[in-house]
Length: 155
Image (cartoon, rainbow, N blue to C red; front, side, top):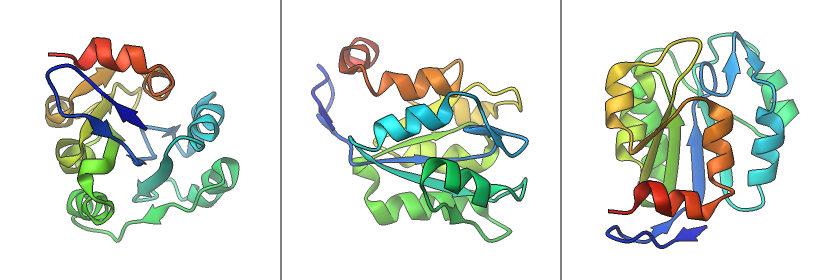
């Protein structure tokens, strides 16, 4: 997915790296509509989920999305998420999150996205983002509309 945005470097996104709990799911269950949006995006970019698996339901989420999440070890989850992003080449990644352990990956990604969540949104993660959405469905839909990207990010 390549997008030319006036006043910025061309975005060459190959990957979307997303947190799961609080971002795509609430209390271990996918937010309604997320599966359809993720499946629709798979033809344009590689989807990567990184999670501490707080709810213990990641296997169910992976089955619903056709993914295999990266499960984080307890401790320093923020650095683990950022390291995974770097392993993909952060300059080719969009990162989506809302929690404290998402801040570094959102900051280091070529395109950092923060979503407001019923679970709550960590203020430093919001401030680290390039763009903020009121919910995950709006964020995922945005990728299907390149003119919205240009309108939002042009300088």
